[in-house]
Image 1 (spheres, rainbow, N blue to C red):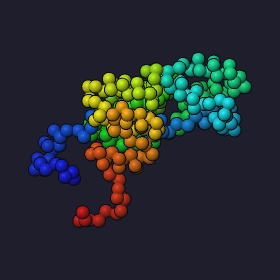
Image 2 (cartoon, protein in one colour):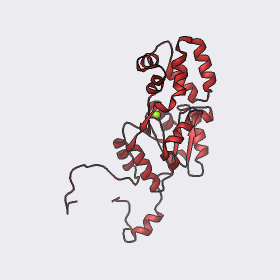
Image 3 (cartoon, rainbow, N blue to C red):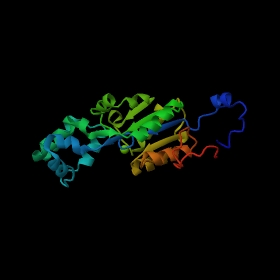
Image 4 (cartoon, helix red, strand yellow):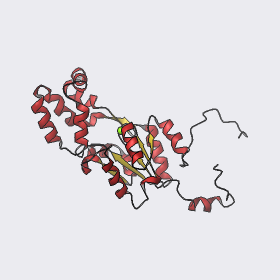
Length: 238
Ligand SMILES: [Mg+2]
């Protein structure tokens, strides 16, 4: 029980009108709610060995190429430029988008559970994702938990990506009906994005795994089940 709630006599009515601990919780998607790995997508086109060689190729910086797509460059343009510079890698380059669905390895169940609990408790939840506009519909088709978000800000649709401060200005506008960034929690697995979010005034949590995230949210007063301690329940104990 929270020591800050003294009016326990009318628990139901008090809780009904208790202020929310935050205005909103904003989730990153990739490797927070959806495990993403480009390797299986490229491997579907050229096999595992060539996929690994491609994604670790120092002459072609896949991470930078992908980040530019997330920031709004069209895949058609991205592929044309990349194939023109690296014609021997054409199958790998085009294979990624063709088999994009394979890069969405699985939902991260523990984080999805947290998202569902927050939504059930009427905490506004939003997503702020670095994701190319052309491939985001693949995720929408696949993962029904994305319907729980009040809003999803997709970098590729905005033409700017995290950690650019401008994306947080867009978030501020999009959630202005809920409150401000300073009463908003942001969750991301990228330290650069977490630092940029903190600069923008958000309470940013660096995601490592669902269990730690749950504890980080519980200590902030969010109404989640606490999974710790995991010792056996003793009847009549405290
Ligand atoms: Mg991420």
